[in-house]
Image (cartoon, rainbow, N blue to C red):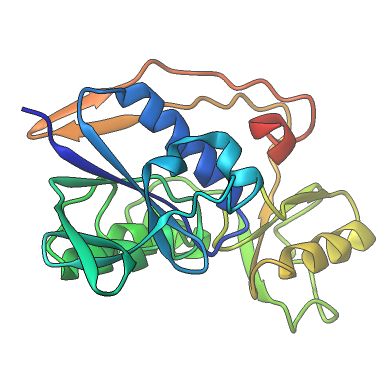
Length: 252
């Protein structure tokens, strides 16, 4: 029996466009095995079949076909073109395709739990902790996992920045709560470090400065839990032509 799968994406994030691509790829992969209901967050919440067409996103009103507005309700959503005619759609599961922001840091997860809609992705607490690079490091250190030396500054502390004695260049600078390599830079001297912090501060008020790895090998591995079974993906070695895997190399 086909299930109603709510594909949630978009949102207030500089990774918005990547989220759209993720959702469209996911819907294409699922095909007609389930009933797919796109839920696009962009200055409101929208649904409708036109959202499955990538050309729609080049012009938010494609050929006059405006998506239906939507709102959450207990166990599902309501879609409408005017307030007098609302169609309820029961949802079996929400497939979260958001990147960054409230879609990935536990905010959306909390909203779905409030409306009793099951969802993919970690829960509220895990999403909140692991979307923040500082909290992630603190958690890893508490559990005795090895982490690289780092320190944290705010956007108001850049001018007074001092390098700890146990750290040396090169350093890698990251916004604390962002993904897709956005706002990340490698610094080889003090001038580059200050410039990197200024760039990171455009995206987050909290900045992580970490010892940069040199001549390292990066391995990606995904895991998903199905009941009591944890399914592990094949390992992947991403190839980079720069000092770290950049946004352009990931997506463009």
